[in-house]
Length: 139
Picture 1 (tube, rainbow, N blue to C red):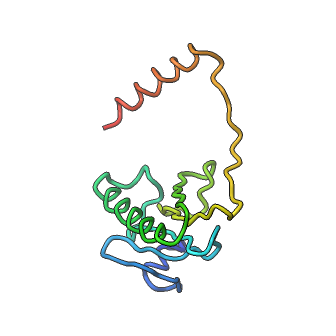
Picture 2 (cartoon, rainbow, N blue to C red):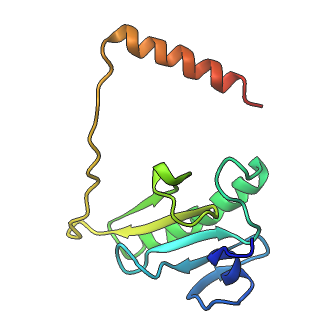
Picture 3 (spheres, rainbow, N blue to C red):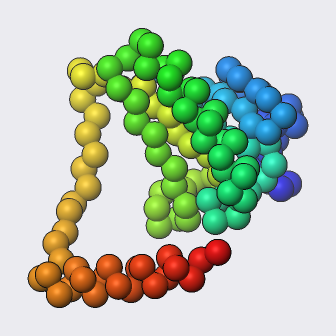
């Protein structure tokens, strides 16, 4: 992708603090970290989001996400892993990537999600049926 910042990093056209690299992906420090050590795990090939990448390639990517999290966990209290798909979810760079963020009991970061409720048990069951059908239709 011509204007993709992550593709430019992969091609070494833009500098990055690369921690790990193999034939399929790379791990780098985020330039605007939530905490020091906040990493981004990206594919070398351009996939806009989770919906475009094959299951086999996603498995490879997730194994590096796990390796990164294990390395970070050696010096922190916990690890947050996030991955956004689409503008409404908060995806800013349209290239699949995972945020692997070291967490500390004193870092003060909290999810501030406003939760909701199903109207009643019937509403919840209707959603279960609807989503189950959609999942069954995906091959």
